[in-house]
Length: 362
Image 1 (tube, one colour):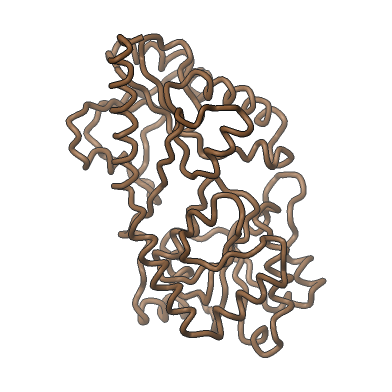
Image 2: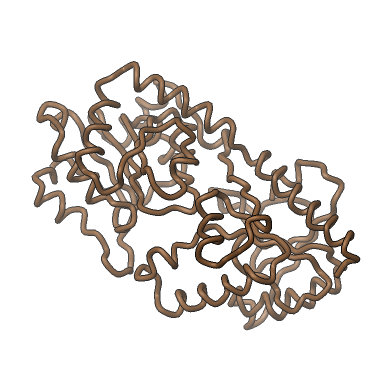
């Protein structure tokens, strides 16, 4: 939204929501100087219900030409208005057991209808676009891939002094590797722990694993402590819970490597965040992660502990490789900005409006 506002496109924008949007990573309202329409009453407690009632009425009153939803919700009865939806992922197809049954059913029904009725679909990766084509038979020409961006004013390389101060404040002794969302089975933290246990003894003794995240109420939840204890590496594991954004930047910046062997991602923002902070990345060779990494990370089979261990040995012991990953990662992150995302979205909006105009505004 903020990048669209800075783009100076000449278009007018109106925002619709059930609450005022907050600036990323803060509790401060975002100030875009756009008209803001807020839902009220019982129906506004549900985004789905409000989208089909209040939003429909507001769109007609505001004379909107095109409605864009950054997730899979659209006002079905808003006639005469072009509709664009960004579908972030299809994890309800790949990992249905991780969603409550009601959410899983709602997503299946909503996404199928939205993919059919939208004038155009946006995905944040080609992998997600391929899912739409394969599983929902969406015509490829109805899909545009617009990658997400990373905010370089937030995710940045800290100086040596800043990193040292951070590590001292958090009492992190020596070297460490970082992982994220460690209770989620889809992130394969069990493979990370097994890989760590396979490291040469001297390297294992010199490293700690910091695993971020909190327990999840989903089927198959991972118990990192139990796995680490079974593998004999519990003394090397630190589980601080979730990290505020400033602390996350410090952890990315100070880590020997960021390990993200996720089995499925619609995009994989943590890969870009780590790269922007100068952290070498080891991530999966499946789903959207290779295209997000863009050749600037080591890619591994997410369930191959031996491959993950070998990659970790390489990153921590090969200074030339580490330097190459840091440089390439910084360049990759610098090329994926919110300004580029906004430009891509504007191109989609203008293309959809032009197409409708050619067809007589149907």
